[in-house]
Image (cartoon, rainbow, N blue to C red; front, side, top):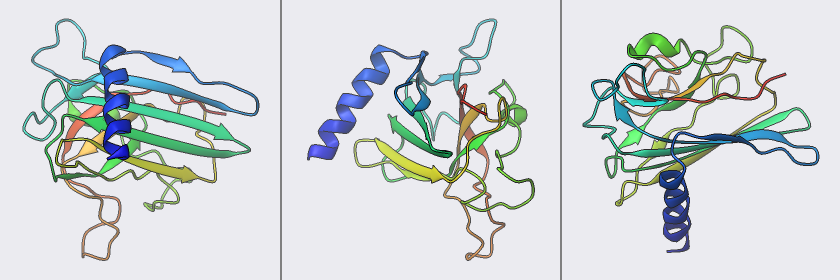
Length: 187
């Protein structure tokens, strides 16, 4: 019950401040907090929203997202909290290299610390399963810091990330269902 209340409070904050990013700096800490509310590309006027849904059945317009990044002693922690998603559905969620665009491919490939290896240690994999109320969260801790300007979005994919054990290609998670442009900190 406590987790549901905490999630509801976080989502209330997301709704109240949708579309903003603030620095979360403190002693020995670098990072940010970004909030967004998903809108469809069709609903966009002149520019693509920071949080855009490409598949409204999986990520309905009005769903919300909170992304935090903390950097301490050469390590990065990314947290993603979402609300308004399909209850019980698992979304492969990854950090991508470019900002979101009208075309789902605009956000580029997964961010990789070292080019080549699609692993949870070399990329940021944040698979999220929405609970009965459509809320979910994930945390990834990496032993590295993003390169300056190298990480710019969080993408929700249509299904869980393959680790290769299921016969799938490691790191794949299907089509891009939604994208949130996030100005990640870097070195």
